[in-house]
Image (cartoon, rainbow, N blue to C red):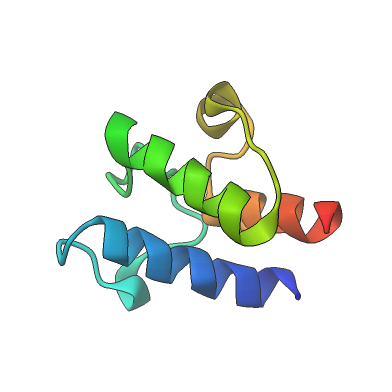
Length: 82
């Protein structure tokens, strides 16, 4: 699975986690997850658990804040880890 396809799945999951507050098509894959308000502390934990369950890739909480801050970065990491 390529990074672009992974980004689409990540966008869809963020939209579902937002319970209707976000539309998947409006999510900027290059936007900082916390700065753009795509995740908060609770949804971030749920998002990371979903990533691990769906892709078999574990991402530490701190890495979401410091290293993988955008959907593009997360998708590249998942694609490289698969």
